[in-house]
Length: 268
Image 1 (cartoon, helix red, strand yellow):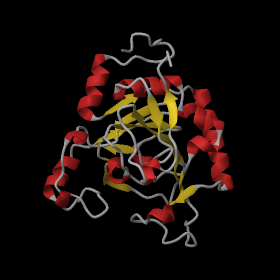
Image 2 (cartoon, rainbow, N blue to C red):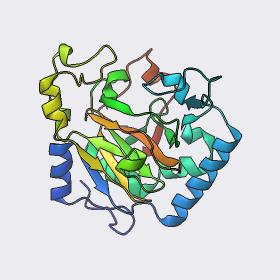
Image 3 (tube, helix red, strand yellow):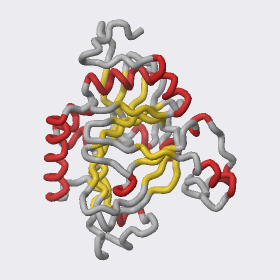
């Protein structure tokens, strides 16, 4: 199916990489974005943060533990993410549809056609010092409405990502597990007061990334992230994709904005 891929421009995954993603639910591709691309994305992001260009989600909006109580409180104007990245600037749109990126997504989804969702993720995460908050264990499917759970997220590091600045943490293989309702709280986060959940969380791995690395992960994989305890803002661009065998459910948030065809068959 992918014998026509030019490995120099559109990387072909090895059988081992495909098996790893299928079993563990994630795959890290090192240095997928060149330094020039990363630097340009960082430059535009910093400009949009400084100018507070809407739409923005603020730390105060999510009300996670440790977040400012309101936008008018101290630290309440701390951005958590720049929304609608694809429509913000051509530099974001170009990365979201980059052939090297979408070639990998196509292989992970086993679909020649790849759609970019403009409703979920499609953002730049801007984890700032001092007022950033941790995100508890969750799977992204908790707030999405699609015909099938087959979606892949692509998380591009625009700087170093470590435990100190709140890098992603993953629970490998949890995309295959079913969880009884009482193992989750009302917001669909894993309840850390339960012994069975604590033993699962003990298997967590840190997804430490360098600038230009991309973490691909299944939308059903449980993941979390810590607060940024460093003195520098952590920036990451996140996009979500699905294939031709899937579609958002009508009249839901997942269908509000039309998707973008990020990759189409060569003969189309």
